[in-house]
Amino acid sequence: KKKKTAPGVTKEVEDTSIDSLQPGMLVQCSVAKVLESGLVVRFLSSFIGTIDLFHLASMIPLPDEDEEEEAKPAAPQDVSATDSYAEKQKILARILYVDVGSKSVGLTLAPHILEQRPPIYHALGARIGQVFAESVIRRIDPGIGMVLSLPASSIPGHSDSAQQLQGWVHISNAADERSEKLEKSFKVGRVVPSRVTGFSWMDGVLNLTMK
Image 1 (tube, rainbow, N blue to C red):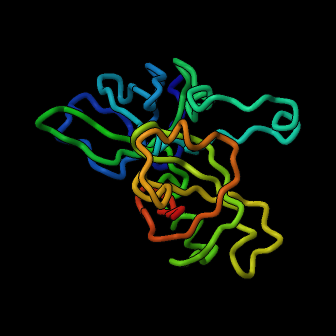
Image 2 (cartoon, helix red, strand yellow):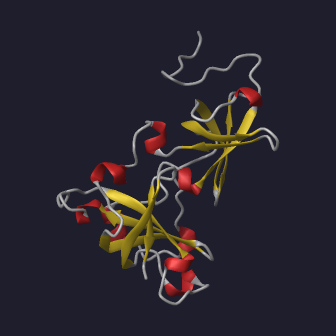
């Protein structure tokens, strides 16, 4: 029996080459390696691609409420968005880009791209200048920036929403005075205020400042 392919998934053919791969293709993948920076995956038998942290199903690991109460504060390096993935795991991803010269392929698991819809922040009406008084630091990338979770209930008209948005703060916008050691100035789980300065449509996150 032939295995059934999900609707819209690209099927493998004998003459499939890297030249035939196109951004937007939906492909069945198998996780080859789980890294701190994301995933290495195999797809269409002979191709290898990468999925970085910004393009996992979620950039932030959100523990259950009971786990949050019982667990001790974790060091930044102990919290990883890749914890829910394992080698040989089967996943569906879309191709983001293909670099024929270097034979590299980038893929995404971001829900808004997989489902071909606007990012959730767009549907909820988030605006530039919007203040999130209770943003929570979920990940710290030393020397680069931080990932925050933002309560959708802070957006006018959505006070009853339990949804969480994802935001990104570059190191240059983390404080009034730049700190080169984010991990020393901030801790995962800390509640901080933030303001929306822009949108990253591809990554599906809000660009933020904490200044």
